[in-house]
View 1 (cartoon, rainbow, N blue to C red):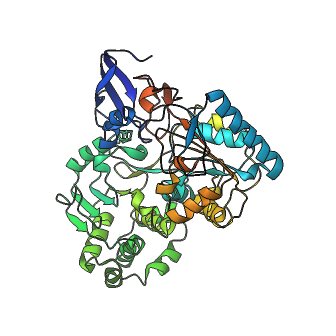
View 2: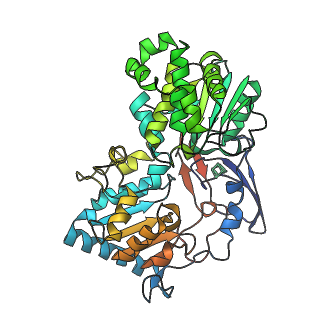
View 3: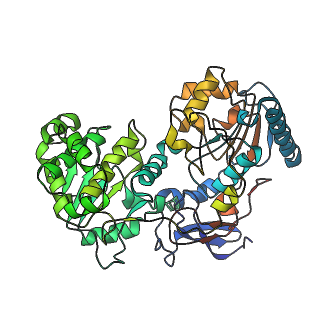
Length: 470
Ligand code: SF4
């Protein structure tokens, strides 16, 4: 229940970080958001989370379900009730499933949020394998590589819980210092940095850390795989690898040795524009100044060849023995809380493969197989199926996905599109039906999204506008 004054304890859902929040209320309005010092994020919030109050009170919030009146994208709407809106979606889904099969329907969302469970359950209930997320450039490659290479997820051990802090940090295309996303936390990282002896920054542009880095590798964008292979070359050629770890825990080391031979520091310098001596120094520091951690940013996933880039970086962690030791990368899986995943998986997954699965096999791995959205839009743009009907929640493909012109043609060629969002986004403008969503500050929920060693209670702070739905 929202209250008119006082401080409400809640959890931010503006990303999947789950930062603890204290919302100050005065006369029914939020006057301040701040981090909750008693939470695991220790009172820290990022700029995006703090801006949520403006988002919630934005005058352009959607308030009522809207049905398209004119041509697609013309911007003419008529207000309808929720019951009619839901009946329309149910009728369309039933109709497309009966006429063209469940795969003709795609259920889409934005990056991982607390509503993943509903999206996947809805898709499974309909029987469609086509659940669409932007996972192919955000966290999907990382999860796939971690799964393939270590069978879990690798996180930096910044807490000192094993009595040791990392001696060497590599921050690779990531600015963890200003955010708390993906189960990592700025507050712990920054504390651990104070105890570190070496900070290596890999970034083409200056960040808040470049001034304090011992070594700043100002990389040519898109050449991260070459840098990782060059560092592996130095470590292996100079015999600096962790023989015991390699012998006990790795597979294919001799193949790796052969593969990286050609990536000499000079060749890698030509590719990456980083001086050869800096590449060699970074490699030696990681291999000899242990334990060490490597933060891999989402930027590594957003380019070409992201899976192989991440594989090369995880290989760096492995050959230096910086896995599963205090102060290094720890292999961890969130405990099954039974809250999120079970809700989706208790409905059996369809047997059919999602669109794009032939080419992007790692996206189609159960239990949360996804379609490849650029393939879906590419096919739609060419007037090809199987997708004809799409439901989108909390995603704005027209501006979020690559190749806007193709996405736009794809949206135009859909036979039915329903969108749930806070605002009339560029994507929603092409919908047949637009439904108003409640903001996270307007919802009661349970947070158990990403590995934060916790379940959080998301408490409603204010009422939603109009008929927006939580
Ligand atoms: S990092 Fe924390 S404060 Fe920032 S958007 Fe994510 S959950 Fe909210």
